Amino acid sequence: RRVSRIGSRRVILEGLWGSFLIFVLFGIAGALALGGALGATWFFAVLAIGRGLLFGIFLAAVIVASYAAVPTITAGEKERVRGFALIQGANGTGKIAGPLIGGLLAGFSFLWSFALIPLFVLVGIVAVTFVSPADRESRAAKGPAPKLKFTDARLRFLLLTIFIVLMPLAISQITVGFVVQDNLRLSGEIAASWTGVALGFLFAALTTTQLVIVPALGLRALTLVMLGCALA
Image (spheres, rainbow, N blue to C red):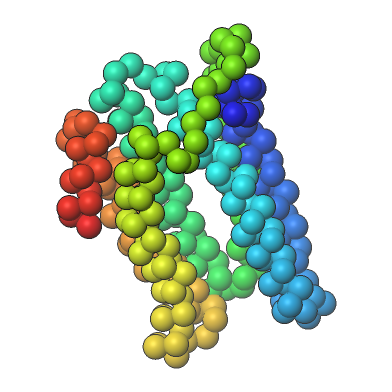
């Protein structure tokens, strides 16, 4: 609804600025925890509330606003599918670079990861501010936005499909670090590096599919969903 009122670009910037502030605070908390000035319980609280809940809200705002901008700059279903695939591919590219860079930096010190995360977000803010074009027309000029509920029958199949397909991916992301550290008997820093490499390979496959295969196929959205489910 906020995208409809103020435009995609402003919502993306709001989400990025919120993420930047969260990661600055998270970095400070991480540095204090590594130095022994912040207890494990308090650091976990910062991790759960800040990096988990609040960052999840700001990240969702960026992703939703990015997707909402696609129909305004594309024409036809195939071009929209390509636009959505490129956005998700860019997301996947970040998920490749993130684990790889973060894992390598953690091999030296976790402080490097804490320090550089806000800087990466700041680069995104600068890019959107000075490179991204302004929204063509606000929803306010068109009247109130139509409301769409999660219970809408048109969404049930897609929501259920996304939940089923993405749940194993989320589980693997969470557990792979523990598997690496426990089975290989590695230190925390080395385990973080190996985990970053493993996740990098995972998201490389996702990004290749989204940036190359999906646009090349040129299929309808529903056909791609069915094909993806069959292959998964």
